Length: 92
Image (cartoon, rainbow, N blue to C red; front, side, top):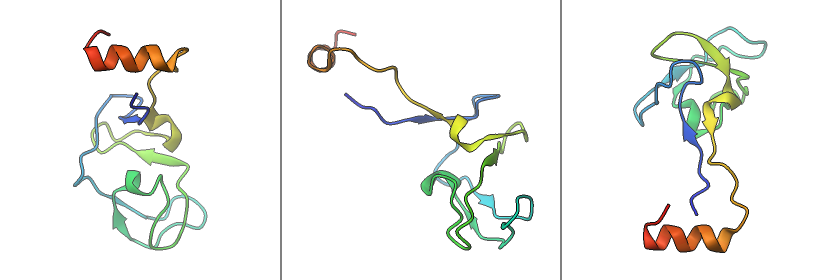
């Protein structure tokens, strides 16, 4: 069963695209190297200076939320074999 996180803004539910970009700008101590990248490719770590961003701004609603709050995982499945069988047969 797919356990990958669905990534979206916890406030407005906007979903970043592959070409969405953030800037490592001054804001948190140790940040500000001006690298431009997709923050979800590196789990919030700037590839330019190594700063881990605790907050991520939404490019849609312009509000900031804890970076970890953007990751939405499916609920755990008690019986993995049963879930896999349902997935194979299309029964959910």
